[in-house]
Image (tube, rainbow, N blue to C red; front, side, top):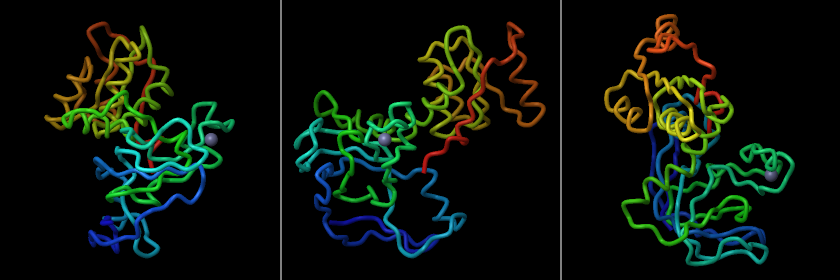
Length: 246
Ligand SMILES: [Zn+2]
């Protein structure tokens, strides 16, 4: 199969890689329908994160199940699935507490690389979620967002205790921040302040439910987020870059 491999900062190659095979009975093999570049892929690309030799790229992915191991019970070949950026069993104590990305058996999907035609997904029952039907092509990018940035943004909004009557400030307007805006609104927050200075992202933030936009940073940003028509102070803040995705 073809797959993307980062050889050194700035040196990305599409090359032939070995087709994946079932190794553990809890594995699934999927054929990628879509995969994308995460902001964290750019750290080694830019040389900010040190590399230890060539490494496959990609951990945000959706696809169709081709094959499952003997112990996989929740997905089957032919199903369209959304996968998490961290493979987790979803049964250990940490998973049951809602911290699947910290699973005791976790495998970071970036070490497998999903910017490829096929990928082995470990712990398939805990990692893959099948959609009710094969989605129309125009829905695939939105489902792809659920593979990493939506879950991470949602986690931030939950950690900030976003909910009815709350004011939430989201620091940062990248993909995770915008998904945190969406999540805070969906969770019922009354006021959602997006700290954003990029016009296209501001528009998306408003579309996703931001009630206020603050363009300043530092002390001016704090003052801006505290002032509102109601004059209420924030009751929670969500900083998406803190619980970062791998
Ligand atoms: Zn677990």
